[in-house]
Length: 169
Image 1: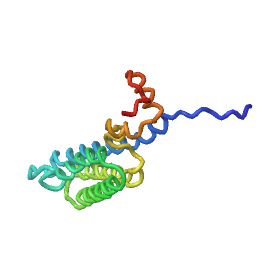
Image 2: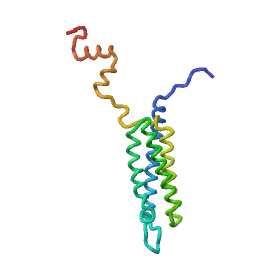
Image 3: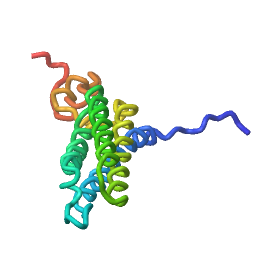
Image 4: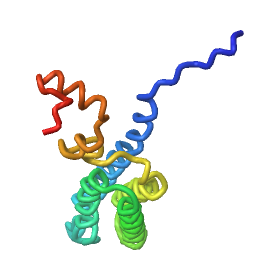
């Protein structure tokens, strides 16, 4: 055995940072679908009432989950962690609504599954939110790119354009 260090793959770190973001998006999407589905099924067959009529908060909570997807992708840092707390509270509210409501086990179970998914997404945002990439995080404006450029590279670029880099006019 040799003591040669194994080469590291730089892309793996970037992929590890992106993975939790896609997990959060998937959890929120599935949680919203579960809550929306629970609001659409019939909960009370004798009165022909849907889940949205028995638990009116299901549809707004599902819409909040969909909006949280866009916010999770766009935000970063502490704002993403605050969003995570809001998502955890929304999931807890959905769980409370599901346990408190009178309805069939299927409807209540679907609400609890959706609530669990939403709470898991919020917890992941709180714990790993600052390490996740954000929308446009790798983009730099031309002015910012120019300000951060290497001075030696600027000289080579000037030569490539045909400019005289020694001309100080």
